Image: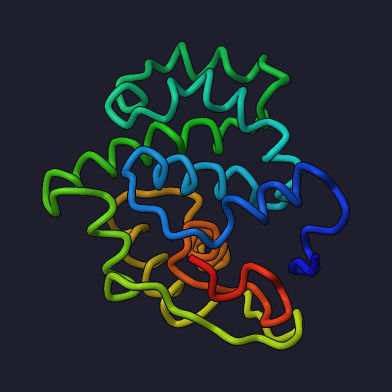
Length: 185
């Protein structure tokens, strides 16, 4: 079975590629989770974050936006001692900040889903890359998303992170044309 190059032979990465990456996602909680996990990945490999995802879900209350927004400074400080997540104070505190920014977006737009998908006009961008070297790290769409999210108080949402988020959540189909998942929905 032909997969995108980045999945390699690692069973966890292959499962993620085969069942999640690039699948259009429209659940506010799940979109919030991916936005936070992509931010946690900054400077690291996705494999590192994926291996810690279950613990992230535990310590951040299943990424329930309202519950995370209500986390205290003490709760966040305690997470600095948890080896099950990436112990970076700025990345940890950004999850609560992003939850609070998400609440404001939901209050204004009705859902995080409607707001985030508006950056791609509500439908996936389907690319037809023939080689991994063609896949960009950023696009005009991710630049716009990043700039707008930052203005709204989101953190760890640079353009590269936003593009990875768009790929992961199916806003962009960047499976190469030789991948069995290309164009599959």
